[in-house]
Length: 387
Ligand SMILES: Cc1ncc(COP(=O)(O)O)c(C=O)c1O
Image (cartoon, rainbow, N blue to C red; front, side):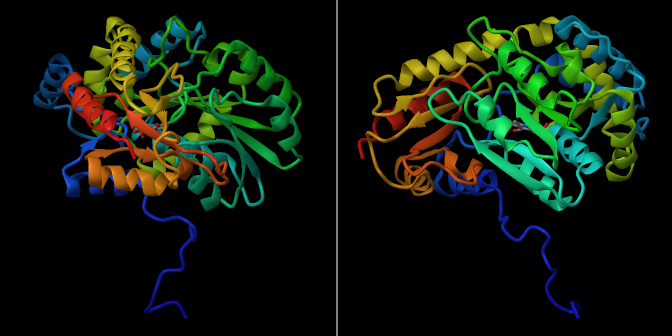
């Protein structure tokens, strides 16, 4: 008998996400919040005006289930110009309530009881709970500092007859690693002739530095034919709170995706879709992003060069890892909480992104999608930390 009484949880080992915990702690202690990944600067006023205009124009009722055609058409053009691939906007793109919903729906569409899913850790924290909720078994492979490159021989060994999906994320949160063409070729070899889907989390596609190009699985036909590819407008237009994104997949995979999407959210915010369709038709809106964030990465690195932290390389995403071994040998969760309370800067301990973090891992993640003044004020506090 369950009622009246407690709900029997489906996620016994899952608590409140670290982002909620650290943001609440930052608020409580008046700390500068470099923990959760969101910009503290505003959205382009042009885009805000477009949303307003579309609301006034009466675009306020349900959108079509897969998204408005105008937005899907603009995205198909954008994907072709960025990744050289032709996407059928009618059958292969679905607008979602953020990247997270797209990830969840792709997992719900494919993963059954006992299916194994390979996940590279540290990993964005929504993958594993979504796998578990569908009876899947996460197979977590640890990436190693300082470069966090994928060890493909380890992946090869981890693949079994039960492997149903491999989740990749490039540019990578939290490590700033980006996958190369060679990585994509290795992945092609591993999935060849196997019933393995790829879930490719590419929400930071435009946040990439040092002249590197983003390698989308969409540019690799042998990968694209088995992939769900996830993007987020939150990252591209600096509006994480809008929770809008999209998924791209071949027609047969997308049909399954939509079967679930229609009962999960049905359709996504209409005026935002109209506004994004007009805004993203102008390529400079996303072509300027690498330079914009590279300047911020360089600024925070320069400001922290006088600190006792070791700064790990960051080639993409808007996160930077700091090694605090020179400062303390505390556990990262303890260290991150302490510097929030005592030094007024909230960060994320990296071990929370891992099932089996290496014992000697002393890393915190900072988000540099912040105003220059915020970065300067936070860096001053971080530089002052001696123990
Ligand atoms: C790697 C990664 N994937 C997916 C998401 C989710 O994107 P959204 O906010 O659009 O749900 C995030 C957000 O932080 C992320 O860092």
